[in-house]
Length: 161
Image (tube, rainbow, N blue to C red; front, side, top):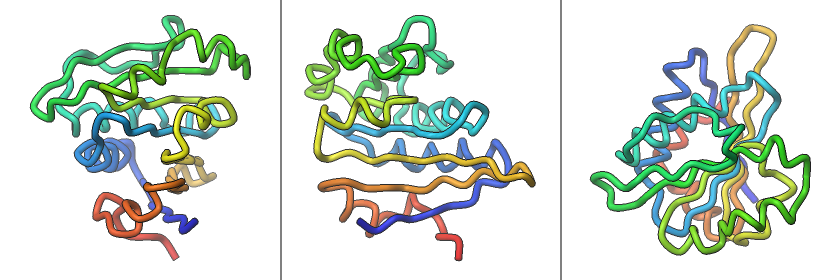
């Protein structure tokens, strides 16, 4: 698995990076956003939604767990999930029926690492970290078919040394 890391010095860079990722998402794609509180997961999700051209305001769906953003120009809907409150409870995640959503939409799961991977062996983990200098670093960890997609993608930006 070839990982790629991208520095995101400002929130606008995270949105821009998210837009470029959103432009390559199709129905059936699963993306997991991992990282501590304040790392920029929801900011990145806003960019993904913009890149996909979906409608609806993107905010952290912590209290509703999942929001469906209807398809826009791309023809692909986005299901945005926040698994933070699930505390690792796979049964609650299964109750959301995300495997059915994957047939018709791209699914983006914040805090889903360790729970949502079972939905598809083909998934992308975007691990966000916030350094002491406030620069975010996004590390792409591709699985399955995402390995080739990340290796040949321009959305990954310039890898950091």
